[in-house]
Image (cartoon, rainbow, N blue to C red; front, side):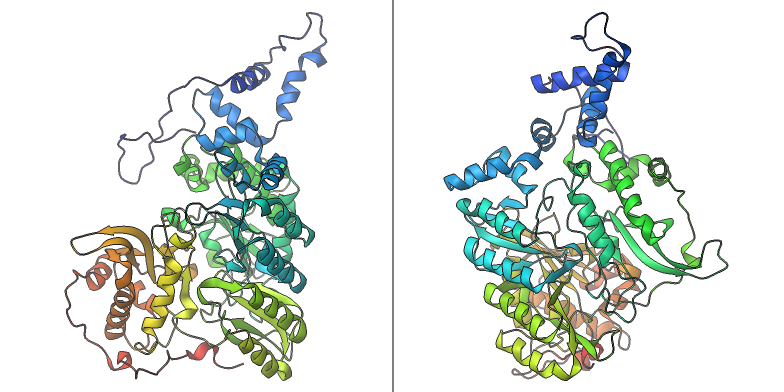
Length: 636
C-alpha cells in the first residue's frame, strides 16, 4: 500500500497512490529487516555455520513466519522503502499489549503517562485526556452492551474509588470512567478485571467494543439473537494476539433485525440478519448479510457485499477479513489507514478473494432482493415502556441525560434491575439503557424506584434522538462543549416546540465524529468561531443524515454558529421543517425527499432575524408546557 503526499493532485473521487520516500532505518528496524528479507529470499542466516543442515537454514524463515501478522506487515512496509507512522513505530519498538509493568510502575509513582506511553496505554483502555482534564479516562469493553447487576455495581465502585464519581455512556453501547488519577491506573484495571470487565483493546489500533441490539433475546420482531455472536467475537479477540496491532481502530456490529438498531452500517464490518425462503438456491433459514467500509467520520456507510453468511460462519469470516486488513492496511498515513481505503485500493472483489483464501468453506452470495428484511426500526424504542416477546414481561427504556450517570444512579439501576427484573442493564448506542424482564404487575414499583433516582422513562421527541460525545469538557480534541450544549438545546426547546416523532440531533466535538454527526437529522460539528462580535467555541451544522434503510450522509447547512446561539438555531431549523413538511412526515422523511441543494437552500441562513412561517402544529406552547410525547412509546 502507499499513501497520498500533501500537495499531490488527483481527479475528484479517485484515490492516487504514491510511494513514500525511503528514510533512514533505526537499528531495531535494520535487525528485523535483515532477517525478514533473508527469509523472503531463502538465504541462510549469516550466523549459521557453512555446513548447517537445510532445516537449520530454514530457521530464519520459520522465525519470521512465527511473528504476529502486524509485525510482518510492518516489516513488509519497511522492506518496500516506506516509513512507518509515529504510532506504527511505537508498536514496532514495543508491543503495547506488554505495557502492564509500565502502567504499574507509573501508578506506584502517581504519574500520568507522557510521550509514547500515552499511545501504548490506550491498548489497555487508558487515555491521558490532559489538558481537558488533568487525569485519565478508561473506556471499558461490554460485548453487546449487556451488563449484569454485579458488574454495574463493580463499575460504580471503581468510578467512585478511582475516578470522578460518574460514568459516561457511549455511542458503542459502552461505558467510560473519567477523572482517574495517575496512582489509580493499575488499581482501577485490577478492580475491573476482577468483575469480568477487561478493557484490553478498547483503544489504540484494535477492534473496539463489539455491538449488537440492546433488545436481543427479548424483541418480538427479532430475526436472530445476536448476543452469543457478540460474546463469541469478543472472547475470540481477547484471546488472540494476532487480532491486535491493526493499522487503525476497527468496529464490528451485529444486527438481528430488532426494533432498536445497532447502527451496523456505521461500522467497518456490519452484519444484518435476514430471512431466506425456499427456492432461492440456498437452504431456507436465517442468514447475515455482510457490509463493509462504514466510517461516517469519513463520509461513508458500510456497503452490502452480497455475501450471505450462516450464523456459524460469521466469526471465521470476520477474523479472516481482519487479517486481510492487517496485512494490507496503510502503515504510514494514519488518515488513510482504515478499512475503507484498503477497499478503495484493492476493490471489494479482490478483498473478498483474499478473504476466501483464509477460509475452509466457500462464501455464498445472494441478491438482497431475494431476502426478507426485518421491519423498520422503532426510533422511539429505546425510551418508554415496551412489551417483550416473553408473555407478561416488559422492558423499560431509561432516559440518561447527555449520557451521564452518577455512581449512586448506576448502583440504584443495578439494584432496580435485580429487584424488579433479571438483573440486567442493556446499554444502547443512543447513550441510554434498558432494564428488561420486568413483570407488568410490578411495573409501577419499578417506575417509582426509577423516579427516586432522579431518572425518567418518559419518551421525549428531543431527548430520544439527542446524542453528544464528551467534547471540550473532557476530551483534548474537542473544539466545543457538546454535553452542556445538548442540555441547553433540550432546555430551550422544551415548552417551545411540539414534535410528534423523534429528531436525531448529534453533537460531536471534533472531526473524529464519535457522536456521528453525519447520520443525524441535525448534525453539529465542533469548531472554533471568530468574527466581529464573537470569538470562542461553536458548531458547523449538517442536515438530513440517516442510517439503515434511510441511510445517507448529512449535507452542510451552516458554518461557525457560536455555541450560545445553537439552541435558537436548532429551534429555527425545526420550525422550518414543521412549516414545510407534508402531513405528518418525520424529519428524516422530509429531508430524504429533497435534493441536497434544496436542503442547503432551505436551511441555510445568513444570520438575519427574518421570521420563519410557522404551521399550526409548530405554534409556541405555554411557558410551562413540556415537549409532547410521541405515540410510538406511550403504551405497553
